Length: 460
RNA sequence: UCCUCAAUAGCUCAUCUGGUAGAGCAUCUGACUGUUAAUCAGAAGGUAGCUGGUUCGAAUCCAGCUUGAGGAGCCA
Image (cartoon, rainbow, N blue to C red):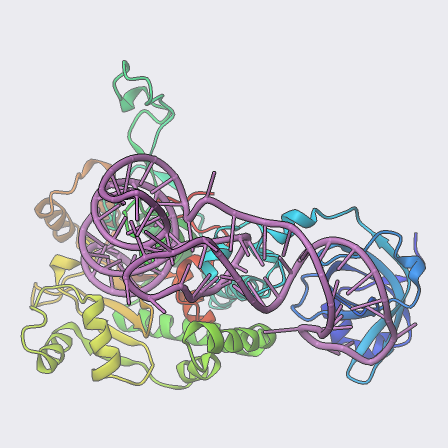
């Protein structure tokens, strides 16, 4: 046992005065080595390095190279800029493979984000990814915090299920059968679950059943889409937050989602200053995104634009005749016009009452029988981050809609039967967590804000 | 999946319309006790993504494939 105390660099920076002139232990890896004398140590706790002075060549039995992991015992002292550690004893944790490091993204240089993506296992060592992952972590924790404060119950909806009726894209089918054996025909009755099974595209249907018992519930986990979409805002595996609340109407979930977003961004601005400052600087230099922090401040101060689908169509057609027909989904071309010309204020736009033909079966119809009690919240640069609705409460209307859409009733009868518990109004939404992280970090590609991005042609 | 563009040293890029492959940084060797994107001296490093074609001759032109970037569709 050592009589000296170990501290990480983040703690040391925060508690300089307390630890000054004490002998401490630090552990980390060499980020820079200058003048045979100055070591910069990083330990991942912060992107800031701690300078270590080597005033004794006996320390250098083996050559110190960039990247080598060290334990240092030394005295924390002041220097003309800040603080540094005057080393008494250094231990190396093995040797590094210098050739490996030289050919990797750990080489001390700027690397493009697509280059970093080619070495996902090493990407965590970069300052950029250190900041992104910490903000992602913080948002994850704070979503749970916020919903817990509001007395929501976290429900673990299954990742493997058999209903794919949500209309939310292609599903991944899963099986234990040997599909490579051409002789045996695929027969799901012989499969482990004795039926077709897939990875979930949304936990919503199961979540609604939990809501009928618990009132305010949410699920937050990975969901899977098998669509062959190759864009900077789609993944095959992504994280979605889905709250579902009894007796909530459309206006209530608008309020909840806006408050949640503002809470999350406010918290990030307050608690992730170091990370946001780094990202602000990074985005200015490399990412064509100026003033990340101002952008976020803007989002928590201002009221969001709220506009009906009908009015949106009219406004778009006023800008450019016949650019969109009533009943069409709002595409990225239209989103650009909305954010650049119609509402150029860099704030989210809430569009409500979408036509039923572009929305799933469970959304409640308006009195006009053409539109639904639904919302999408669009963010500048990113697009849709939230989609939600009031749910259809009437057993007959729901069944009628499902029949018209020719959805297989068998697998979701249990869901339809929930309406036999009465016509309880309820609403919910899905929030694309990764897109939110993308917006808050200013990254223009969703593949750069998740540790292991899974998308067509790419699996770790 | 569709459209457009790109692929040259470990990285970022040059090589002007076909004629011997070039730089900066990183790496390696050495120097350096107040540096902080350290500096200085020297060294090493590439069959130009792959396959084929045109040509006396291809990094350069053509075709296919692979990978990446941007846009579209699907969506969160």
